[in-house]
Image 1: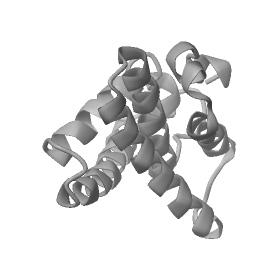
Image 2: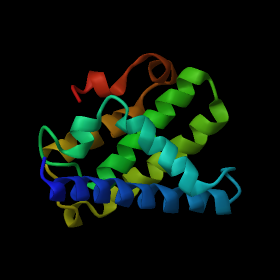
Image 3: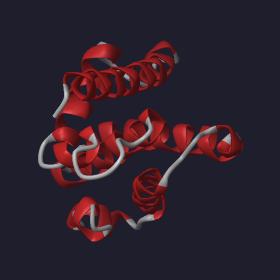
Image 4: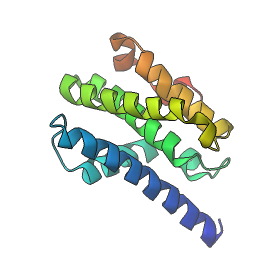
Length: 146
C-alpha cells in the first residue's frame, strides 16, 4: 500500500464520520437521540470496519463513497441493536438510515457511485425494508456477499 492510499482511506472514513455525526446531531437536536453524535458516529464506523476493513478501505476494489459507507454503518447498527433487542436505539438508527437513503434517492445522479457503492446501498436498503425477525437473524454483509 502506498502512503497516499492510507490518506485516502482515512479521509473517506473521516468523511463518513462527518456525515453520520451531522445526521445524528439532527436527531439529538430533535430530542430523539441521547449521546454525543461524533462519538456515536465513531462507534458505528468502528463496528462497520470490524471484519470488513479490506472492503471499506478499498484494498480489494475501489474504496466506497463515504455516503455509502455511512448508510452501511447505519444498517449494521440497526441489525446489531435488533439482535441486542434494544428497540429504542434500533428505532433511532432505523430513522437515520431512512433519512440517509432518502437523501441518496433524491440526489442519486449527483453521487459518483461505483459497483461497490451500489452493493453497499442495496444491503442498506434491504435492512430498511426487512421484517423485524430478519433483522435479528440475518448477517447483512454476508448475505450480500460483502
